Length: 223
Image 1 (cartoon, one colour):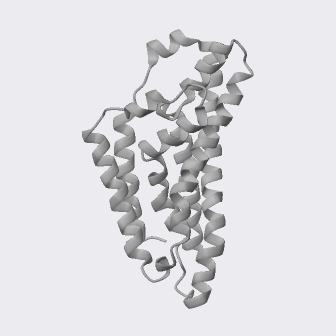
Image 2: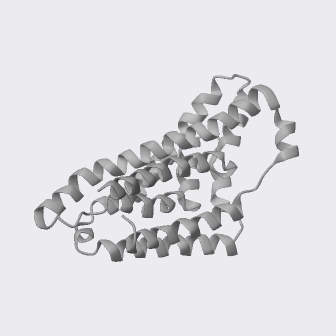
């Protein structure tokens, strides 16, 4: 029982840390928040932009997680689905390692539509997929849950869990990106970005592979 609770706690921490990681990654939008505030010459535009980015990211997370929460077949094929989800995340990571080009359609989104841009960016970079193995681990059906009991837990509690995972992850992402955006805007300035710009594309792709492998491992040996 203690080890199971520890495993679940570790998965929730993974939700938080993945959110912070997404927020730090410039590809998830914090430079756009800084840009919006500079263009409007109004510091109030910064939190507004961060909120819009958060809304888009949250909708992307829910859009990926919610279908899994509604899968009745998860009761009978939990391990297989978790392994399949892990393989899918690994495949996405391998694809991003091979293809380093940023999706061109993101550049066509109007700068004022930050929520839409954030939603599409999260989908294109596999941000939602990264959460799937972690989410399925949190929602693992216990050995004593069978039949209607398991189905009720899956259709009820797991839907709430999907929204909770998406919300906590998005909050962590907003904090991570927001701290950087505020620091750049108020103190360091754009010259700091030009001197210290960091590209996390390869790290992002490798992290997808790592999370996918973790999902497969936890399906076999973990919670």
